[in-house]
Image (cartoon, rainbow, N blue to C red; front, side, top):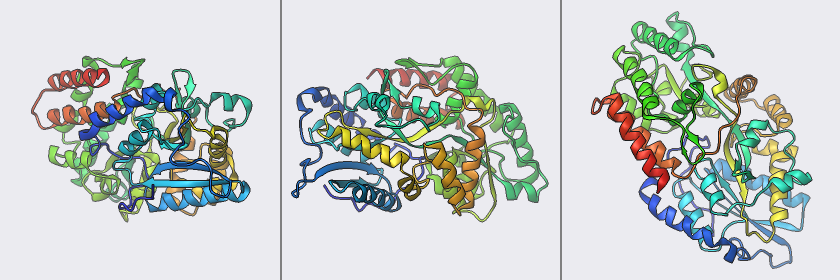
Length: 446
């Protein structure tokens, strides 16, 4: 395999999976073949496991753009410098099609020793016995997670097994246009505002500036997820949905009220915000005073506007948020060189030189001690800001929820469909909620 030459993908974790959904059935079919992994566990991972000069070759597969590829390759080269008997087969590609390729490799008995994965698919791969349980390495000290936030580590556990180690930490962030507010003498939003207070604030912004105060996040699964947790519910509960039709109806009605009051953009502009990538979010295109993103996306947003941006927690009790793994490193359960693969992951997380090289490309470093070093060293003011905000929010984080279950990507897509039906008036909030829950049940059962 060779590195792909796809256009650069965003290094942040605001990716959508719309491009993958038409092939979801194929992906599941390929994943189903992973059930047979005990039979192919001895298969070589991504090619021969020994280099021609007798050194051990570890294959590693990740998604991302050119910048991430260069940083990752430099960190792996550093590992080889410190461990000359280990070399790497490095394979990466842009995020589009990544999980199709990973499923094909895994089902075909030629998987990488180490692979990057996120919370859309971690539980699915763990359930198919594709991921090595890393807990014994943690217990022995071979994998040092002592400097990780407890909830960040917890968010890699599936069915009692540590299926993945966070490559970086992230959390939800409400980004607002500070320049617009200052120019118009308006107050900045603050962490701890209720959802109703946020909408009232946004209505005031709309009236004073002519710019809609807030993007409507009713189609945004991470906003719904935080809101549910603040209501004592969750997105998932075991293998079932953690919410009811009535919960979603209330969520859709909340935002219908906001639209009716002029606190949000019109449906066409809301759709634009739902469909676009991070570089064209409404807060930087001037079509809304706020956008609902991940905190580590602040630097990417800042590149696309000359205005000063601020970021706070989502409305409501900030303990509804948690230390989320922006993505994970997992080890293929059948790897012949599992011990070395785990050591590589430990190196990427805990070696000071490697962590400095990788920076915040995959989110904030999981090792809290090294995160402080990165914060002190970076000259990127937007990144300093996002680190400071997440560090402050970490004081109020609640326990991590369970890792999303099979069908999560479909659930995300169905939320967008149902929310937009309500936004455009094609359905009432109650009708859209019923459609969404029915579609979700089918997605997680298939």
